[in-house]
Length: 417
Image (cartoon, rainbow, N blue to C red; front, side):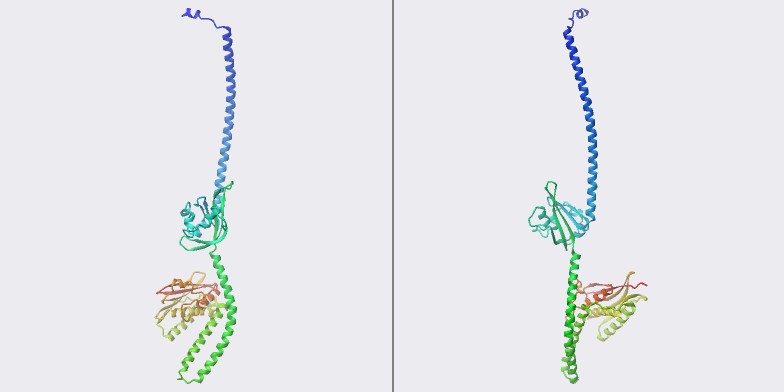
């Protein structure tokens, strides 16, 4: 083995030099690789730092967006106007608190539901908001319409609609902002009625003057004719009908003047029990005179309850309600007049009967002027009652069950010491 080693040929200088060059070149490449690796590590460190920074910015941006979304949602929920947003498919994506109050729907019931299936007027019509979404022509963005409440009653609304688009102009959906104008409509009707009543008041003064003069003359001539007739003359019956008709005409004219003219009340401090006592006594006499089978129950009368009122006007209010109750009990019944507690602010005068009652569709109209269900009624009695009560800063309420009876409650402000 030793012999073989001694006999191995020696390395030539050229081969040794080649090895040295290879080693040197390898060292140079290794140094370059190390430098590149160090540079790469530095770049990687910088990338990590930049990535951390970008992540922080992204988290801040997301937090800001979430905060902004919460802020915008809070604004939408606090708005008095209803807001409904839909996506490109017509599904509801936004439904704020006011929209829920106006329509009667809970947001959980409508979100992601079809707008058309909930708010279309009928199965064959396209809601205006979907026309705006699909870019229909001549679609009004500002208008009024009827929106159907969940329970089925119509709600008049004023609305504004607009399409939603991204920065590139691509459609995202549409939004509708609307408000309930039912109170405004009611106020407009009330103002119109006020104007009508004002015009009627001016006309009634003229008409009353023109009618009362002939009525007075007719009454005078009728009295003269009656004086010239014998007691047993059958024509006296005809004259009696004429006198009765003249009296009714005079009552209509008087009620018309009372209703159309401003209430001139002489307010003073009065004990409410004294007014009720006088009216009850008069009604009792009237029941006896007419021999009507009505039982009058005089309820409790608390002492020391005072109101600031015109006794004549309040007496007329109670008397009209009692006479109406008597007419509703032609076949007999019970009439109760009572003074009830109405809290710290009001005293309540109650007139209750067990008569025929009032149908629900009629109850809503009984205080309207000239509305009556009686053959010889003028339709002004309850209208005047309501006007007198309101002139005392009070209000009147009615509850009636057909076939069982009717209860009127008059609320008058208490006079505080």
